[in-house]
Image (cartoon, rainbow, N blue to C red; front, side, top):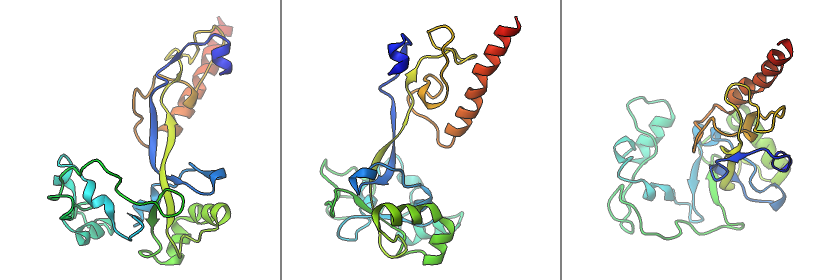
Amino acid sequence: MAYYDAGAELMDVEFTQFHPTGMVWPLSVRGILVTEGVRGDGGILKNNKGERFMFNYISERFAPETADTVEEADRWLKGDKNARRSTRAPDPRRGRPGESPPRSRPVAARRYGGVFLDIASRVPAETIKRKLPSMYHQFMELAEVDITKEPMEVGPTLHYFMGGIRVDADSQETTVPGLFACGECAAGLHGANRLGGNSLSDLIVSASSPGMARWRTSAS
């Protein structure tokens, strides 16, 4: 808002990106990111009945690249290059595998409105602590949840703003002369949706541009 009050032009402020898993409790930490590494290392989503409910919500578009069985999905997680990830197991309540389900809530809330991200039942405790130390400490310290013994309660969380302050692509200068912006507060690089894994490189590269621009100006 300080840049806006100074007269800088904004753009694409409606473009936001959500991450599928964030903490939901306590309220003081609601929205803090739960890394995709939990799912990559074997964590699965369940509802309050212990069902892997996301199997019922895979569209026809992605069905060909999706596992036919839970066993195939597990083989993919273990590195089997011939297996496909996730699964599209049939559910008589939802129609054929891969069909879009009717518009309804897919899962009942447990305690705080989230769903369960379970890695405790699938990976040994010591492996979790070794491969996901930050997540282990995050839940222990902030939610008093031991993720080696019980599931995490998670929900979608706002992750990144693609929009922000309009800047010159070469210098990162805003529409206010002499005022610069870089990183996530600056807009224009990612369009409507950012590709995964490039936010740090965005920050590092764009942060050097204002300095170089000022150096060229002063040198001339």
